Length: 249
Length: 317
Image 1 (cartoon, one colour):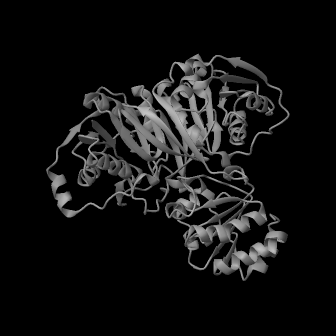
Image 2 (cartoon, chains in turn red, blue):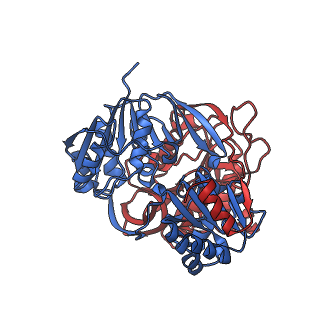
Image 3 (cartoon, rainbow over the protein chains, first blue to last red):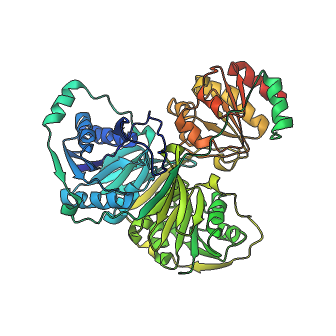
């Protein structure tokens, strides 16, 4: 079984982004970029499935500028077999990325696609679901456990009230939640090995996909600041404040 | 300009209508005077009845089918799509269910989705947080149908009573014919008599400062009992296994905005702050005076939580 894993290059999760003074967006010049953490979990899960003998080949895909090659090399170092970059400097929105991934899933005849439940830059939480819809195949979002057997994926999902488990007929799309696994550290020998793996670059046009953005960002602003309040000396002072000043208890 | 007719997807468990629906209705009512609610499930008479009472709702469309009993994305999306063309706006609360199903609907309609909106600017323009709430984007959609999930804390709920919408039953054929590719296996819901986290007026949350699940039970739970509060936790506490996943407050967990949020032993990672900084009053108890949580707290107490919290519980009991 072939498996496709989608990864996005985003501002590293440790960076506190700043809004540009002209309100056109956030300033991502000269900030550290990394693989979206949820996608890293997706790569790790694919590699574990391969190690367990369930998967024959892992193809990792990214869509974006040429620098995404670094993100793809990281995925190859974790253990993906080959990579495809769909290179574009355009503003690629979730629907466009879903269309790109659909074209590649069809081309590669992948039986499963795993990707993060959301990217930590635009926080959309859409691409996996959209891909499943475009492919007309089932989806399991927010996965915390994945078991593959007999042409089915049994997936435990993190939902509002706790956990639920569903069974999907393959092919299917799975999006990862935080507790699915803990990604391994990449080792130097694996980084060296990753440099020799195939990384193919294609353009969206070659896939025949419409990537035109549908949403226009009019402006980006700082959120309203919450100012720090007061420090209280002890529990008695806290209770007094909550009762008489804030009046919340 | 085309008529602005909204469809809101009800959040429910076949037995009761969830409060998050009211926030989504409130957002829809800001631009549409004609707002319908879709109650899609199995055996949903009580839910449809409750939905029909929401102030401002025109019509409740009730669809009962075994295929919809578990809110699986494929049949639910198919059911929504069967009536989608009648609407200019399709809304759902940004709950696990809403986030699961709505992008599927958007993709099938070949339109973008606007996720997690916090403000309606105009019928085609909305505000939504990006970068874990560190920036607010104003985005405009050029699509003919707007598909939108609503961050419930961004909108005061529509009144649950005062309406008298008609209830129209429709067939679940669309769902039934899309029901084969996935199936429901089981559910392990956290059993609790407490208020639901996203609807609670008071929340007490515990973090890694507690050190163990036992201490969470010993220290946090009695305080929540004394306050009649819901229980929450930081990602660190959930990852460490102190409490179940559905306790997690934060960017990737639940977004909450209660009247009172008490953070116990939570340092205040950006990720966590993104989920609770819109609370009305925030109290932080932490032994580290440098903890970032104090930068958003209205009342901060630098103290050993193992003595301060039981003392607070006692004072409130």
